[in-house]
Length: 221
Image (cartoon, rainbow, N blue to C red; front, side, top):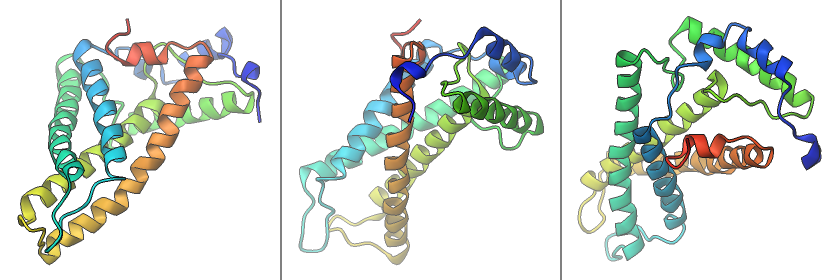
């Protein structure tokens, strides 16, 4: 295991090599504008609260009413559905209007997949030297991972909305809605994993002297 002092920013040569490795056009032009930062902050607060509330909430069943935590889970979940949808729409608008690459979802672009592969190679090279890869602009690998998290959150919010509108007042569900509920619960485990990994990497970058957190959130530059 590397010591904290061993986790250092990549050298200028490594940064220059990354910029000239074929991913340069994907590393520039990404703007963490105020609206994006505000959406990101809402998502962080909403998702973390949702996952914590899920530990204490009680689902309604015939003969067993829901508790207040479940009602809060429903309301926050519906709000998050709007926030996730707004985030994806705004990302697409920035791509179409401001010509920004949609790094959050590179899977259908050959060029974007190639840049993602190259960034993964560069990242593994830095990790083998006990360094945290860092760039002041968005790069394909972190953006793609964030995109997966946004898709995961959108899926959970959407399936939660289906349960909300499909479940009867006493908690009765049709076979279809019950199936959606089971999928919703199973996929939520992946969100726990994402919450364990993604913020941890952000904290490591912060203590390594990188300004990742201040750039991503609305209070950053």
